[in-house]
Length: 443
Image (cartoon, rainbow, N blue to C red):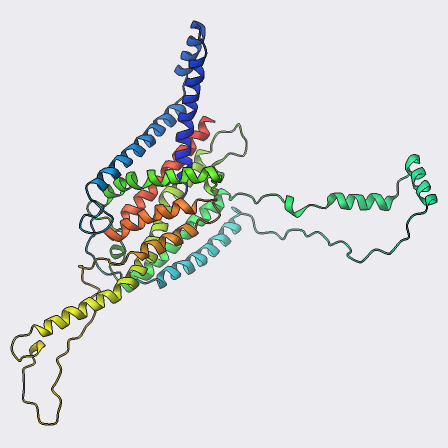
């Protein structure tokens, strides 16, 4: 449910475009003292919504400039995504104990919880039960009888009937049937999601998150901290700094994409009032802000970044870790001094005809060791692709959301914490909700 990349940037740019256009028009006309006074009065009468929108627009433009300058500075100093001088230093941590199967478990829990909640909402009357739509009876497809062409006398008789005003009831009924026929291509568009339906979706995702967390905790007692839901020192600040670096470039991409195709999202459609002259419903806004800016970032980052990307990272690095452990064990055996075998096995006389014993060391991956660091990079791209496809149907939004997900996945790969991606996600959705509310109040 990520959204708002186009909305926030487009509103900021359009607000300043209107201001520049107004200033240009004013400069080309000669203004009298009375017109200057009227314009000054209009400036004084600027409402709080216009002030708030202008302040947010200025902050967004400053964020664009700051982000661009910091990117140039980091690249000039030799910082790169990975390596010794990485943008975000990689943290040593525990190897993920979960797998991609838990990602599938989350989907099953989501279907189960959403079905139960949908039944509860329908029983309470908050959402309507699905009704069977009336189907149009098919017309008789039997071939019409072959009739000879009308004779000239029949044509004259039909003209006389038309002149006399006589109407054939069968012809009238057939005309009505043809008029009532609706072209399938001109069918009414699908209705937007209602506020209860959006709340149902968020509650279903939150319930699936709790169920999956319970399953993970049954497998490991430190599951919540291992997956990265407990903040560590510096995670909150890193999240806000990363939002300043990730969101402006992604918003720029979304603005360019939205020029080709208009962006739409069911949450933004639900915020629109039913009547044009009615202001926004603040109760609906508070509910949608809670579900969109608070619940959605936690759920989606846990689902995509934690379960999917973490499971793929384990799959990609597990065999490499085993190979590294095997190499270390073989090196230890080769460096054993004298004729003594490793693990305290001393050299002994070997009877004739028998093979000498070979010293071996058990090779096992210690999942509880906290010195593991990720090596593979492709899990970030795979999880980002899934994240973009989940937003299919929102125009061209999957294109910038893929790049947004790359930044969020990079943060999780380097830190092993979900807090920085959650904060970036929260800033994006929260900023969009606030700017949408201000724009609706202004209108």
